[in-house]
Amino acid sequence: MDDVARVVLALEATQVAEEVLHYLDRSGLARVVATATDDRQLVEAVRQTEPDLVVAQPSLASAARGSNVLALDGRETVGSLRTALEAGARGYFVWPMDRERLLGAVARSGSDRRSSGPRGLVVAVRGARGGAGATFVAVHLAAAVVRTGRSCLLVDGDPLADDVRTAVGAPLEGLHTVGDLLPIAEHVKASQVKEAAWVHAAGFAVLPAPEPEARIGGEGFASVVGASASASDVVVVHLSKALDDGAVGALRVADRVLHVLVLDAVSFRAADRALEAMAPLRLASRSGFVVNRAARSEIAPGDVRRVFGVDALAVLPVDRGVERAQMRGRLLAPKGRTGRAFDRLAVRVCEELTDVAA
Image 1 (cartoon, rainbow, N blue to C red):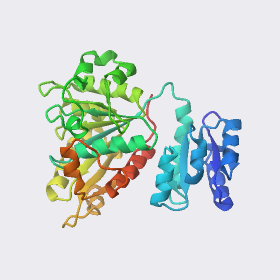
Image 2 (spheres, one colour):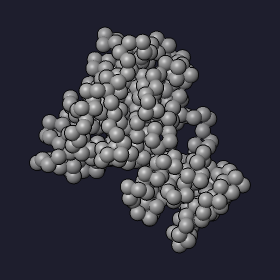
Image 3 (cartoon, rainbow, N blue to C red):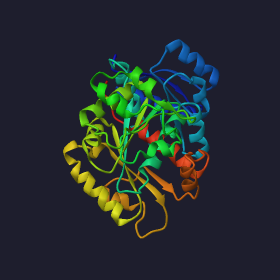
Image 4 (tube, one colour):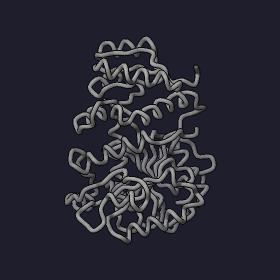
């Protein structure tokens, strides 16, 4: 039974609770060790059983704060998702539509328990073409990850642009950068990454890109990203659109690769060519697409599936506040339409990842 995840189930609806319990128990990948229908029962169940994770409806999830919590609801609403995020849930699922994804997340908790050491998730973000908004997506994704209750480190791997530093309003001088860690990349430790990173007011840490003349080698950058993954729950790596050695190194260790598109033919063609160039890296199963600045056009978000075979992970609306915020080195407020879209993206990216090697 060591391979089986031990679950506390906290749902008020008796019929749904029975369906979920039987589904998890019959899977052979999980065992429900206790159930609860209110806050008090949930707190007591967690205390007595010390489960691997708690599957709870969003309104009860906060009672299990400090545990590994997955939120489960009968239908998706903005209020339900927000409640789950505020409770620190590490995933959000709708029953029964998402039951297979729920089982995958539950099963991973059992394998995580056997892991020889913690390693965070690595998410690489790259633009299909210049101006697609990869920096915007990487920065706001990092902020949204923090709102899920996870720690996040944003690493800039594009020294020619160094856009992340400007986008987050970081000081132009006096900060450690990726370049400071590259000479010791082979032996760099998580503690050194933490000491080097600059912390944004939104809660995520930042490692700016090195000087423009710096050459980021693939193995060295991969080692820095790996050490960053030992220092944080999630690492968001901002990459240039060029597939140079540094980008390839980061892509090799990435658990998820997000390609940022805008709704024009140039962007779609560029993404298609990039995927073809990256074919030797076998990233197809790890690749996803984010549509930025979606507006009425001959090309629609639904065309992502037609061209690439999968739906977009997120569709970000046109937001007039983006340019003004970027000019001032500020982030958009999380309560707007764009902020909510990033909250959903952060949850999806984190919960859909497969097992991460220690």
